Length: 127
Image 1: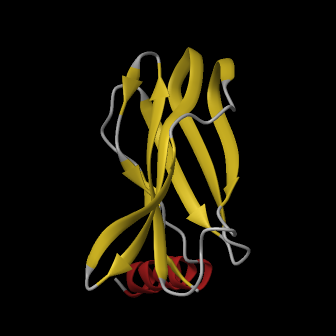
Image 2: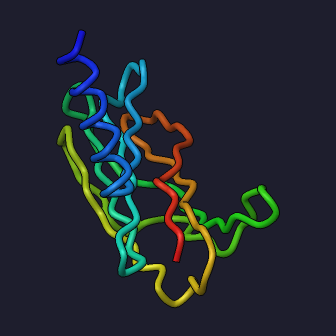
């Protein structure tokens, strides 16, 4: 029991210190989807699928700002130019530094693989 509490505490500390968001879903295509904001206002995306797919990409990205406890759109990338062909993994970065001032931000994004999409959110970050 004590080891479990310590392990859970270490994971929570890691998530707080590195401000990451992990999305693992019971999904037939996606094994792992992650979007993280770094201190330079760049969002890094990492996607793994459960098998090799013909292509992996992110079909839409929307930068959102938290205003009065609701998420408001700031700007959108409708299609990311990065595409991985015949693979089970994908990574890309988007620099939002020209759109971010002060406040708390996140990115709503839609990964696509094997004609399958889902809606995900990056970690939020306060600048």
